[in-house]
Image (cartoon, rainbow, N blue to C red; front, side):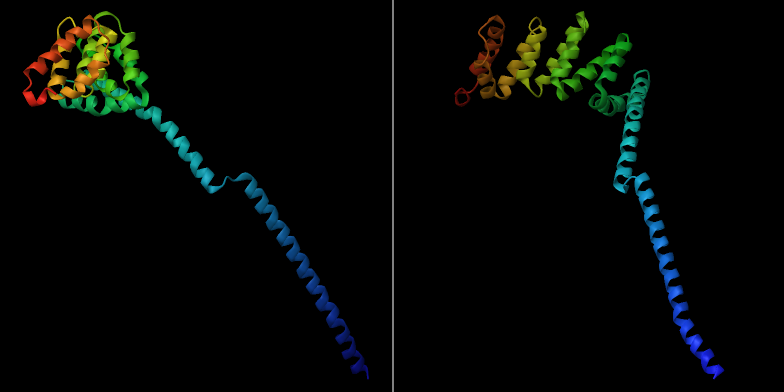
Length: 234
């Protein structure tokens, strides 16, 4: 009898014990989930998205690289100007100078201003030859800021550079800066243009004002017309 009572008591106690254990486990699970949510929330609040973080660091790298690159280009160009190595100067004029004109033309004009004598003339001519092809308006503004013979020399360089690619623009530069007429160089440019492409040159002439300057150029064009064979006159 006593044994039956003892077994009955154990059977009653077992469900209570199991319920207690289950409740404790559920409570631990709730606490664990709340803790994970808190950690995730704190992490998301302090960390940038991967794409944003990458982009920010990339932009910073680009911004810090550009001034250094331009400064290095400027140093390379300055060294080449005083170097006796023709290869070094050729590389600087053909590679370094165009890159610097594209990225920071102000540095180039300031470099020209710091030079003197033959070095200044050589650098100025190279700048004009390249800049007048890349950005004609900016180049003309800079040419206009020069004075006296240097202004005239830069305009002549620009005129001759454009003559090979855009003769009409070469004439425009000559007219704007008043060069090319006193030595006949502009007349020669127009005559060469008419010889190579008479129809294009004649169409351009029709758009020009009738004045003393145009008369000089017209005479050269008519000379080419007169020398042309019959089937090229029309």
